[in-house]
Length: 104
Image 1 (tube, rainbow, N blue to C red):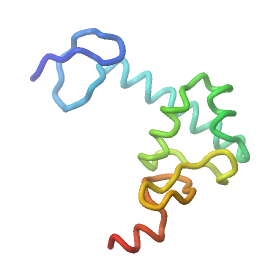
Image 2: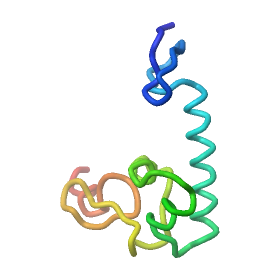
Image 3: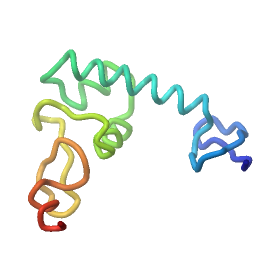
Image 4: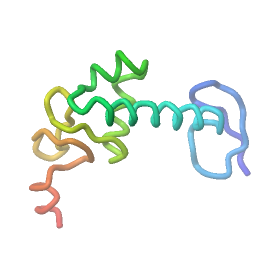
């Protein structure tokens, strides 16, 4: 076990896995994710800005969940990422279908 300092709350914790946050902060993040996921599900046409304003979460965090394929909006109107390869709008992940096909 390794002693680490949480990047969010700055408390010391014992890490058994390579995570940057303590268990309390990770639990709080997961709770916030579930709240955001429910909001997006209930408000199908919402945008990232709607989520930021209604759920009190940072835009950076919402986009991180989208990049991780954990969160996806119904449309790209105001709620999209850009493909890291070509810049086309995508709903989640890192690459568009076209670029994924080229990589494989």
